[in-house]
Length: 130
Image (cartoon, rainbow, N blue to C red; front, side, top):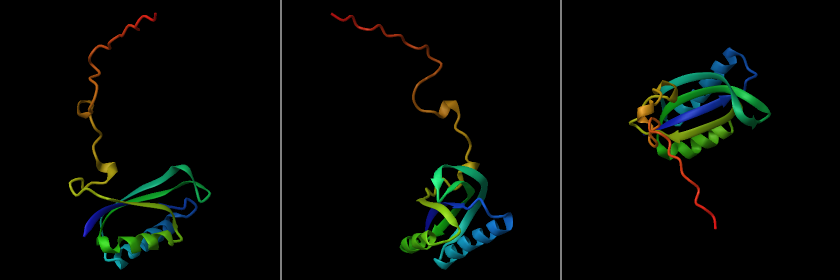
């Protein structure tokens, strides 16, 4: 079994009860393909970066899923045919990073690679043109 992170976007035009039904139908698909949800998080309604299927926003549901790699292609095909999904994305999850993105701490300035912002800025003189 391999660990995957799935982001599922549902239509914004449904009520909370229908959204739970949609999430349960995706859960049923995961179980059908011998998968197991290890962690789930409801991100709520968010705007999309671009219009998808005539929607400008959608309800986001993020899960960590354990699936056998041999079933992944069939699972993706079933998700593409799922009528309730506007969009989905599955990525391989690094087992060392077991928490969902919303639970990760924000990086501090000292963790950021690159330039030291406390150092004074250098000024460069433009070379003389001849």
